[in-house]
Image 1 (cartoon, rainbow, N blue to C red):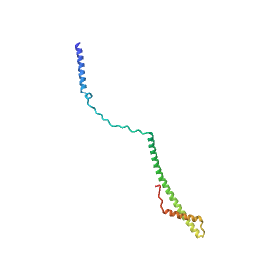
Image 2: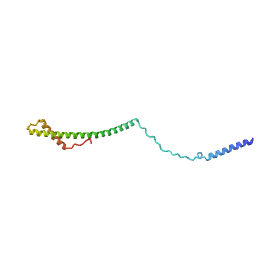
Image 3: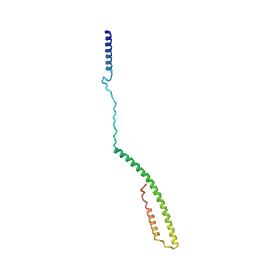
Image 4: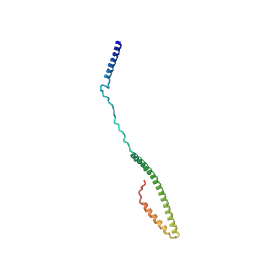
Length: 138
């Protein structure tokens, strides 16, 4: 019986010695420092609802400004076309007025006062055309 208990004691002592040797050679108990790479992490700034609303408003206003600029270009073109058309009509009316004045002088008909005022207005407009106006919608 002594041999059985001796074997058990011997096995227990050997296992304790092996365990101590393993613990002795392990790197965690010898105080070897493990280094960890700790990066600097920052939490992004939380935006408030007011800041988001202001940003959305600015984006909407920028889109609106682009749209207005685009539409002003179209309006400018339409105004130039209408101005050219009105100028051609004015010149045609001036030609008709001159023809009518020649016809009246050939037939010895006295010109009406309205016709005289129209002729004066046309001369004033021709003088105004000599001075170019700045184009504000370009």
